[in-house]
Length: 476
Image (spheres, rainbow, N blue to C red):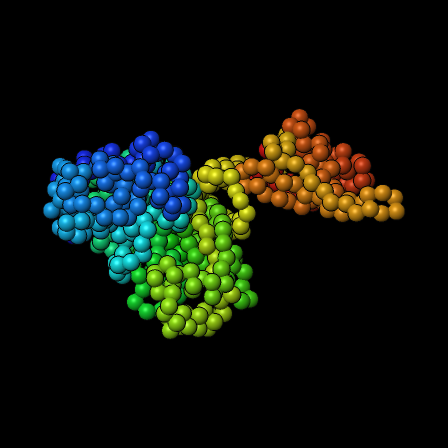
């Protein structure tokens, strides 16, 4: 299936070469463009002329019809009859957008998702650029690589971003219509993609890549036929477990896999232990970050609203009954970063609901960089550590008979992950000497002398705390 033949898609790309976000901002002004981003199209409509940019803007940004003759001129050398035949436009003497068009960087991407309507969906609906895809793009490492894979490509947004720093890009999707949109968008944007249709990992069985990304259909436990873009067709959170289990075999040595996922919070189980159990015992280092947790009712409401089925009480009830039968207390959402390494698997799962300095890819790079270093006891014993830039010590104190008594002390990062870490007085005293000049062994000796302790015993107690502070970026 193709939405347009290659030659016609190339002409469409030529016709729309001037339709980019930078052009809108330059012609209509950044304030007008920003207002349109918020759904206020008044100023934009007032400034749109009858030129090509004005026609495209009314069709694809505002979502209002234009005269057929005006559209015919704006899309040349792509014919108006071609636009109507393929579904890009719909109508008669006046035409409207049949597809959605969105900007991502300097690229223009088509999909079934119109900017200002949720009508007309089918089970094979192909999404455009949403919040989840933006999060994955923000987190994806952009270091140049030889080969990259996008699992569940949809309209091709991740694959086209990968094409900017990967020599070859392979993209897969179960949906024939999604592959067709990805093919169209690749041609319109002058990119070369290897596009394969099939269920998740099946099209690339036996192959390995330097970088793998996936925004899969991760929604959990939906009853009924499901939506191809949303529902993975696996039991519970099985699609995330499947990707995790396959991670080592998909990656070249040193390669990275990054994917979005939902996972269950089951009564009586630790969600982190549950997720960690999905990964192979050898060859991967994993960082799982939970950004959000919804209770079952909010989760069901969210996804029924997303698919336009929020008035389907029977489906909502069946879905909630399923969650109750599985003893589900909540559903977590976040992203997973996996690196192929030598040796036993290491998995770190954590919650990060607070604001974090973006882009997330910098946080991912930092996380892997720290854990690639030798942080064994013998190494840290001889290390010279300093408090990282932007780290401050905060305290709370209560008034007592002899003045203020400090009852709580914690470190706070101003940037990066913006962690907060509570400390006991001994660790506070240790960090006060971390100026980058004295070795840890000398600091421990001084503390041991102060408290009358055995240095080796004191270091044995301090080591896991010191290592944790290094890994979380408080000490460098």
